[in-house]
Image 1 (cartoon, rainbow, N blue to C red):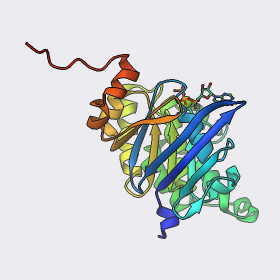
Image 2 (cartoon, protein in one colour):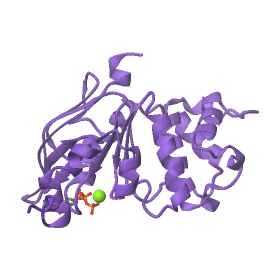
Image 3 (spheres, rainbow, N blue to C red):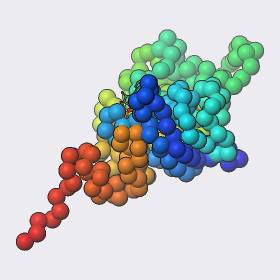
Length: 253
Ligand SMILES: Nc1ncnc2c1ncn2[C@@H]1O[C@H](COP(=O)(O)OP(=O)(O)OP(=O)(O)O)[C@@H](O)[C@H]1O
Ligand SMILES: [Mg+2]
């Protein structure tokens, strides 16, 4: 595997403005290959806009490199073909198709039309593998529309896996999930990040404490703090933003 396929994310001086309002204000971010990075910050911090900029959905200035490729200036589809995949807060699966068909279509995004049109007797290996990884093997023939909310998120992650995304950017994947679904999602992200790079936007602190390898805190479009969970939690600037004041120091006599 080349560096480009398995590379990390390197963001420099990223800036996104909407009619004079700067939503992302000069962000530098390094996510090494194989990281499981959590991106947190208050509402409006610019988290989703940052992911939008990386994936080509909004115009940005600065530099976003994935492996040895510059992503800024390329269109959404080209960026996806370079191995950068993302999910949205509302799962975007084809509800009228089965779970397996959803994966098959995602796997086929790079295939020619005649390969897709050919009738297949069995599922491609990568689809079978993804069904197993996302824990939906026993749902392969169910319509995606009948899946529970959490299962749709897993299906979406599966679609990124079969499309061979090497960098996955997930926007609040556990929002609205039950406790058990969160646990399963955390385990899934750990598995996925064994050979891919994963960036997760998440508000759930309990989930973050359990599964984050590293954390970046955004605030008002800028990186406020970065490090391990313990480092970020101990940072007075983070406490200020989340609690309105630093956590009290041990009482002095
Ligand atoms: N298309 C847009 N046009 C104008 N302003 C926008 C647009 N998209 C985002 N913004 C603004 O940019 C800022 C950052 O928004 P963004 O959605 O990136 O925040 P976020 O950190 O993802 O917040 P949340 O936790 O609520 O999802 C907000 O003030 C938002 O109102
Ligand atoms: Mg957001």
